[in-house]
Length: 250
Image (tube, rainbow, N blue to C red; front, side, top):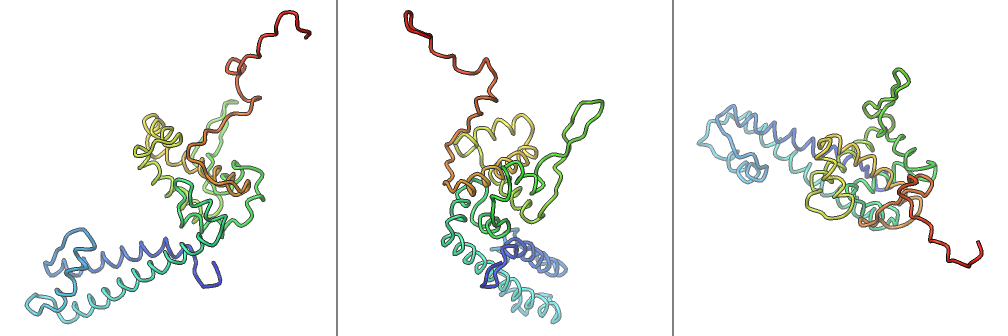
């Protein structure tokens, strides 16, 4: 939360409140046989006229309830626009948030929340530790000496973890529209394990990328391909040493 009184969590709570308000309005209208299209825009465009139309069967109490709900809906929308402006301003004025916002699946809201909620990313020794802090690593169980991976632990901050998973879900669903290495990896992963597990894997990957971007103070490059350290590359995959020329000393 910053000095202006804005809390990034408000930006994720308000859409749910807006949806609840819209559903309440639809429920009241349905009791009187008034049904509109699923789009909120359709309902918004017609609602004022419906409330004022004396020829329909709405009671005075129903009109009063609808009028109050309509005003609340507009207030929620205005607050959402205010939240969006606050998030955008934070990202524009914070070099760290600006770097984080460029990561696929993080965006401005996530960047603002992580920079404010985590603070110093160097408190974590590596991306894996940061991912574990968010609760994105799978739990481990051993049976008969054979380790097996379970569901993610869900330790840490629920809000930050939810943001990471929601952002990862958006990245997974749109992976086929992009042609960077991560998106190609996601398309293959979805085909192999399904989109739900792919979302968790992407969230874990994004947590590690975010840690790297924030601790190394380098911009995100979507076309970057990480390479395994030489010690972790299998011997048969390592490039062979150049042959020594005859007559040259060893």
